[in-house]
Image (tube, rainbow, N blue to C red; front, side, top):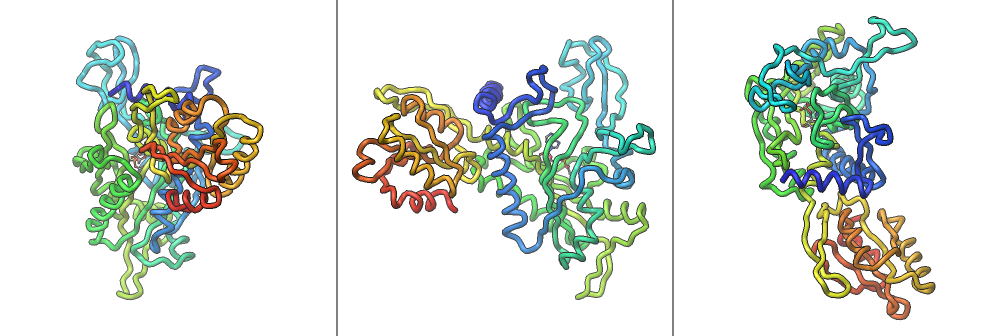
Length: 438
Ligand code: GAP
């Protein structure tokens, strides 16, 4: 199973999906860059999330808050005092670890069993605003996007005239100085969050907490993740974040074991209350129908783009066999990505670089390109080209052969079944639209 992480990391680098940042300088452990196909995949994940969380709903609106916020935000939110992990150092090799992630009291680096007493290590990155490096100028890189929704709650509610229950959605970079970044893009120090803060009437929060757990689990299933690889685990009282009344993780069975994929928290009115007290501003909501004023409770589904991307890749990764041009069985690596996530939707492949075939294939490519991200590849044997597309999850390959020049038809091959249909060029866009959507 651990091999799966290795195979995937190597595929991701070879095909320009994701690879270590600053690699020519030896990399910066825990930062990753996303290449051409990775960018498309990330955009597709963000789009699928936004579509389900904002576009298809009437009760959620968007926000893009600044990454740098007033340091008072992080004091009020409890992050300055409480956003920390227990850090221990091995007394033998001096490597540092998160105490709660050690498997028994054994150093994963040298095997010795003696550690320093745990020290709380704050995970927020600090920097200085303006040209002076002094305490008064300290600002933090946000460790979550959520605080933007809380401090802008009143402005957004009034501007969009939303009535509770309603939510504010945001996608954006977040930063945590993780003690032990690990497992490719699973835990990194810079990552992107997709969060909704869903404001509800106190007393209805538990119902909404259940609702969001179901909705979020279904989102992964709808995007093709195998249900048996997903489960929901409630947090024990001693693992709850400082702001949470209750929390649950959607977990995925990674090659390194069941781990958190997405967090759903019932934050009660912790954040709005803290900001109301610290800022002196009234953040209550007036329910006109019932003539009642209250501080809403908040239920929050929060998912990392990078972690979602890792799960979609892991879950879609298959190794099988396919016949070569000579009819011999060959190894085939496949990313069986959901069509909405696939970075490239169609590839146009002329059978050869023949001078009459190529212009026609280019024309077909030009026809499809405005509709879907479409690749063109005329290099190498056709079997090899199919393999290249399978490996990055392209749902359809369109092949032009010499008959295409006379019968005006192409062969469309579907990725998972490898079934082939002969389709007229005139009908090709309709054929693909039926299967890929707009
Ligand atoms: N606002 C609540 C919040 O941030 P969280 O459980 O700390 O909750 C939410 O994080 C999600 O963000 C996680 O379930 C995971 O998908 C992602 N995430 C958190 N820390 C991460 C890290 N260091 N690297 C990559 N993704 C991370």
